[in-house]
Length: 154
Length: 154
DNA sequence: CAACGATATTTGTATGTGCAAACAATATTT
DNA sequence: AAATATTGTTTGCACATACAAATATCGTTG
Image (cartoon, rainbow over all chains, first blue to last red):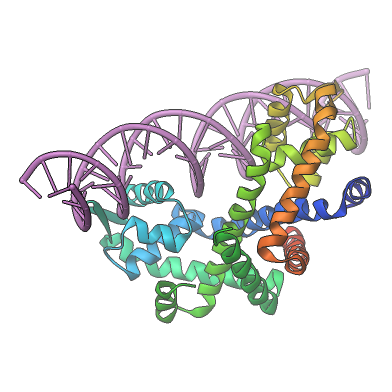
């Protein structure tokens, strides 16, 4: 909290400021972390979601959008858009099977996946440098816990 | 981590999976928290950023975009867009002063601000219900710390 | 087996956000 | 005092994401 925020906190309830703070810092953290990711994956013309998605497709050829939606914590429609982009870059291809869609890596996709993995490693190193290795684990665990709690029915 | 992710983790380096996990869960958390906020502020046709911005403008009439950018952890261009929307809703007005722009609340803006504050309270209550009161504080502190660390020059 | 409900995916539309460039005004240097 | 650099704000463009509606297919029930 900066001095301005503290001043505001005195006028209103501290409790609500905390919520505001959590909301903002959670988004700010996500943006800051994403920035590091995008910096690494930008050279492939990807964002972190594409990068993770490609790894999943290589690891599980024939994976469906629904499964990806679950794994990536993203809406099916978002998955479609991400797959489109990856398809346009010739890293994956789609195959219709009934009402489902199976997603397979192309040769190019398989070829580039190791580089993507290396980029993930670099991202990890950079997090640790900035946040501290133990903090990364703690933070991740706490965030995962909170996210799970929020994901459950209220 | 679900069973699929665990399987993947065994194939690649665990370390890099942790980074992936942090990146994703940070974004997932931000989305989940934002969803609660938007639910409360949606009735005003606002997102949480508008809501917080309006509170800041009421608290500090004549605040500039730069200052808001600092407080809200958002890019100046984003601030411009948010102010435009708030202006269009007649909650704030802009006044040019040299190269700066001063933002003032309108009467409507001042009138609605208490309702917004109440919405912030409700958001806080809902967080506590789901995540747990003590966890909210811990999580917020840890996130703020990490965000600050990431904001500093590397 | 035909009809209807459930599930999987895609498309249309909208939004918050950021980057880079364009302005506009102030500050600094020569 | 003129030229140049710096600072503050806005605009153009792009992107990840979500929601709601439209399709398409599958499963189930009458």
